[in-house]
Length: 228
Image (cartoon, rainbow, N blue to C red; front, side, top):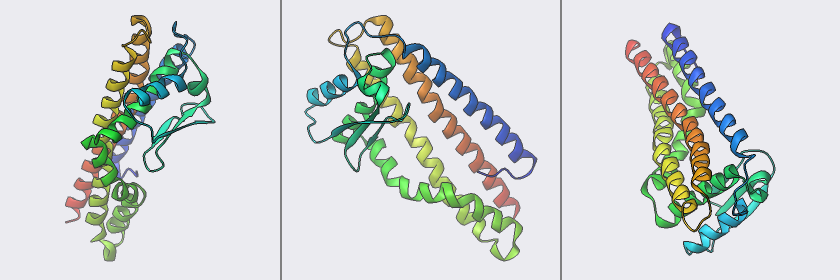
């Protein structure tokens, strides 16, 4: 994203502050609750396997990968990849994160509409996030390329739609995770509150990304209108 003019620079500063605040919250929550073990002793891998078994999901793999907070579900490969600390760990943070990723698996298996909508929008959103700002800049500064401004705006709108539809996907996955962790004495109430803290902090990063994208989209639309 490229800021243009005074309003663009203001948007950049606001969104940088939002992103910085979200990262501080995530790192703080993870640092605190990754050091608190659950009394049940269950690991992230074990809760992931249990959730898939309880939901009759037997066609999704589970892998351990390097890094920290690199956890994700790959719907195309049908594999959940958990970082080492989450896969082998039995901390509050480990179980919360692992259960969240399986929440995405359950969404996929149950045909959760926002998740499928996000997958549908992704190709255009990927192109838009990479090339839309360049097309808009070319249209603004090069008279012959002026028609490209609105092409860029529409592509960036697809990228914005992706960030917005991601919000219900992430919130729902956390809801499913916490519901599971609250059953069968997997977590005590204090531990459950810690898992909720970790997942809520992680959700802030998606909220910040959506707000950032919406603000830039409005900025680009304003620029396009001024150029006719």
